Image (cartoon, rainbow, N blue to C red):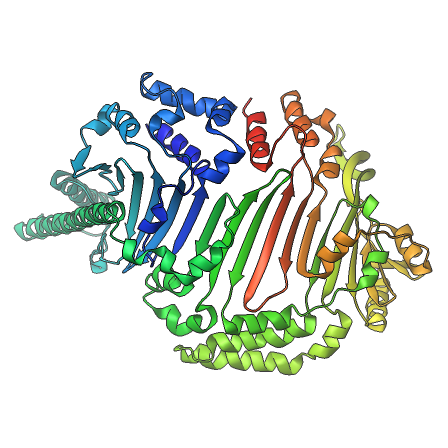
Length: 635
């Protein structure tokens, strides 16, 4: 049954959206909300197509087996696959409630599914038009009617001393269990003590030791101890039972409130932050988390008895912060958008830290046609060194912890005094680009050892083939003289060698790649190809980068690009297990490139985007691509 419910949850999470307007049942104070828009999803991949996939066939097979053939299709469950499915979190008064809700066309299918399971039938109850059952262990509640299916799981985080403590002065381990079990443990301890005393008497020849007989007073002491331990155990168990019952009643109350529409007058659509995150709603999935301070207070502060609130200026830094994201499948891609809205103070610090300008000369020093991927950072070293101490002062300046209130701001001031932000910013400005040009095989020599007949160790030199990356790293720098001084010190210490102005790290023979360093044209270089650095210094390197990549690198605070197709094609398939080769062949034929970018701040918002391109051939859209990908690995 659990396996089937899990399968159905996965299925519903992949196929539901907005027809029943369940969103109007979600309270305005929900802390997080996740939406799956079934109408958009089923337009991309119908229920029939899903059932014909391997994963769909497995789910239908399990459904048929579980219901002895009464339900043979996902549509038999009565789910409204054109409606929206929701998950949301409600955090209030030390209680976290997780809701899962999806719309139904009718309850007949779920009635069959639940009532055909004998263990559940005895627990199923009905109140009004709501049918439900509850888990005895955690009070989680599963309920449904003709319009919706709802699951509520709550956790009471209140610290009510569920487990209690024993008197440490007793210096004995507390034993939980029945009265007989406790008595047996105590008597065993007494017998062990008596055996030790008898051993001491028998082994003593020079001294006469008087064995003190067990008295009625001793028996009374152990009897009182047993009674006290049993009473404490019963009290702890009573608290745990009361807490479980309290959570179960709370879950049932929340289920009824949701299903009866008690939050309709003040639902999540009245939350401006949530509504603003929805945008044009051209997505298949949407997630939103707001009111960071409420989450922080409930998740962290209550568990730390409020000490953290006085220690950090959390409210000042995170008040009003929210995160939202959307997942959109197109014909040729899957796109994940993430927006983070931060507080005014955090935005001020972040803008200064990432107020960088990418060096356009970087694009002269690598060739897109020979590139497997890149990673860029467009920050300001001066801004980072200036703003980070300020951020520390903002966090701790008004701390209730007197020591931290004094030491952290003082340390930040001292750091600022010793740092020359402008000078360090000249040395490394903050704009950096790492490019992987190739992945190649290289023969390396290494030493292993064997032993002769006299057990003398004999060194043996061997060679092996390693796959190594060919890369170049670039960072804008006006500190050429400092660079040369540092490199010359390394040369004197035999850590590096220099040839024609290019420095080489003295790496062990077991390291399959050589790394070279150079400072030229206002740029600090580290690379695996000496020839490339020589060509750059001599001005005869032929670089070539498209306007799209230039834009991705220059206009964002960070960018990561991976040419997945080219990388996968270099995997030595013949060296892999035979059973895995077919899967690798599928990946090789069906992998495209991926791009991850984080934009510069606009107001208080930072936006990140992940674009995974998918091949058009064999997949009618991005969602079908993922289903086909799963199917390929289910063999």
